Length: 310
Image (cartoon, rainbow, N blue to C red):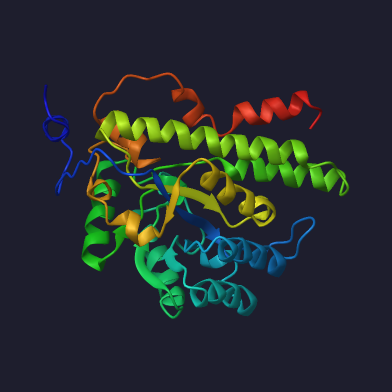
């Protein structure tokens, strides 16, 4: 049988090196995008949301990474203080642009996107915990060869790591539903949304673990994408506890990124999304059972909540 390395080569994937081990416990590293948000939400103030997430991480002794979209708050004194609190607590700080533009937009040039990164860097490089890690907005890495290759060259030139995600979630979609429900009724019963959220995280975790085993022949350290939002301010404690109950080890993002899988560069016309999904598409892996649930943006959970009247 062809080795995974040969498969990668035959499908044009750049590979620094491959390391496969048979026996290792499944692990996950927590990362959060779009923070720190200073926007108003029901139930909790911006400061309370930020602190609730930090408290949940501290309770479980988890060190995470916050990928900052500076215009969401860090350009303001209060938001900068929220971000600094993450660095002071020992969490890593990464770059997620100034204003979260879409690299795939025809109205956005490669130069403009790169300037967004440099502008954000000028703010976050002064924070404790700062790392030269960049996460693409919307996990979109360029819809043309010029943008794709231009960004790969830019990141290399400036010493940035592509802060890949392997375990993608649609927490943002369920957060939108949570906010919608609370806006209509501040005293609404939130237990159905909480159950749907935890079920969603479990489903994605199991599916991406299975995909890593299919593609790599092993459990890779998963890097989960969540967001700096209300749903995690309320239930991040439960999310972390659920992973522990599932028997998963929680590791730091730096430890996860050290795995060779995060040095892969899928060769696709429009790379992006979960690294595992991008690898599967690069390798021509046929759609498998559960594929739709990995790319449906939480549609199944939202429809189930509608049936319950939410």
